[in-house]
Image (cartoon, rainbow, N blue to C red; front, side, top):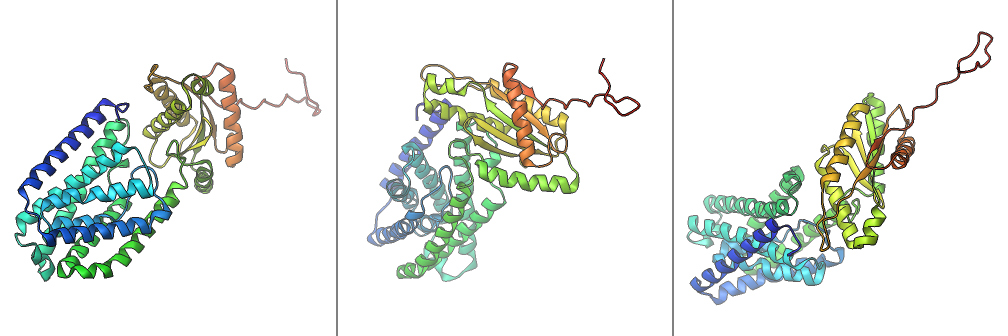
Length: 411
């Protein structure tokens, strides 16, 4: 963790310290009853069953979504707040040991962030609903309060994770870790599921046996969809892999040909990347790849199609870009990459990139022709000294012809 940006280290340490102190204070102020412990154990067991049932599917790297809030939201509503703080801990341990081992501080931070959000939702719910059993009576008031507190949980949890992600990558877009239409839909499903499980659990703890199978099925479907999306991305950079990029690029080119809109392709290559691997090692080389990919993402529009083409090459499709716009974008990418630095134990690693630009219907009529033209332009940029942008060489003009149709000499 200490190799991460100082802002991220400070933030993570502050959240963990606050979480630890809050757990200690609330634990001392809480009277633990057998019935509460039994409910907490039952909800934790249901979460464990969900994790085990989806274990063979695996879990995509990075920020992934699951339906485990269906088990810690009922703990937040029906039990004292300390249980809401503790509920994510055993499930995160199980995820680390049984599903996907990741960097330990990330698991610990995730547990703390979820626990703090659930603890805040629990405190707010118990403030407005003094008797939690009213949630299962069917009255509209407690159910509306539970729904509002579930929204509070989602907002706080997303905010805590988003701040950490931004501290890790200040150049990244907030939209990548906040909400989009798909995430809002998933959040709505999670919140509804958590409130329903809380109502059922309050009626009779044994009814969890009827709720568990559909939740497991929903979670398997969600993870399967995420893993399908992960199969389209490159593991080291998070960009589209070559096959997925080609599929999307083909679609964009067909659309551009149909509508007559301009389109450009930019092939980007890291200069002397082998030297980076040989000097600093492949782990640092992977960091350089990831940083270059992040820089490309921050400088492109949402609908630009960017992917890793292989090795140290990246490819960008720019819908709606003519030759002047394409050159301007490629130059901006070149300048931004030249300014980035990857910290290592030895020194900060800097790299430059060369790029070849090809324009649809000028340098090629389809994807293969555009790639070939951009590759020739990239080769030309390398020959001219690297760290530059080139277009394919203009085709030679035909020699002038004499009046009788024979080719004439060029003066």
